[in-house]
Image 1 (cartoon, helix red, strand yellow):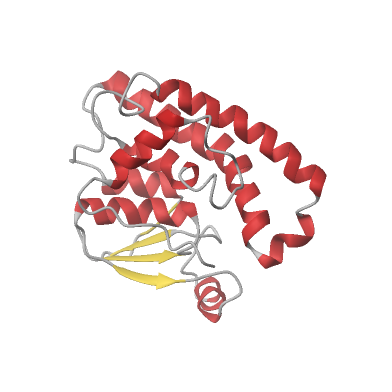
Image 2 (cartoon, one colour):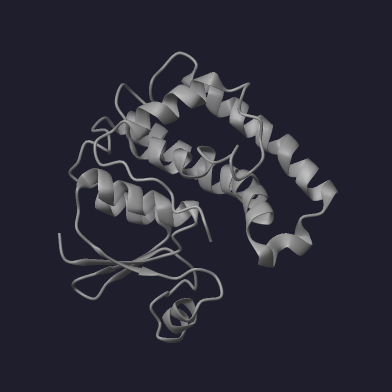
Length: 206
């Protein structure tokens, strides 16, 4: 695979998912950190480094720029054990990845952002935080139920589904303010992922 440059927001779960997979694969890459409000982000947007206008974006050595975290994960994991070989298992993996982007990101990630980023503080009204907390607990219960009798979300080995869901779920307590006591299976799953060789933590400070 060609040389890689990752434009990333290090404190964001979406960027972190890509950083984590690269680390677990032992892949070398160059990172351009673009936190909110930084000159690096403004420059990346001005120079066309972010075709979709958001992070992450993976620049491949042949000049291709790949956007959207799920698509980047899919590209990087080709030919590795992070994608199951069975078509049904692949579909189940993708279902969890879509669930993460459509539901988890719009609730659990948003609540964490409202609590952690100063530029989002004005939107962090008590009513909105309470609604996100309630919905977030519903989503965490779905993940908990899936993991209650299995080690990984799909099949018997970790897949992209685990990386995608872990990106925001593992900080639902520390950043999102959810009580994680009702979710022991999630805690065990997080510990298994964090024990994998090459695991790196989220750079949680914006």
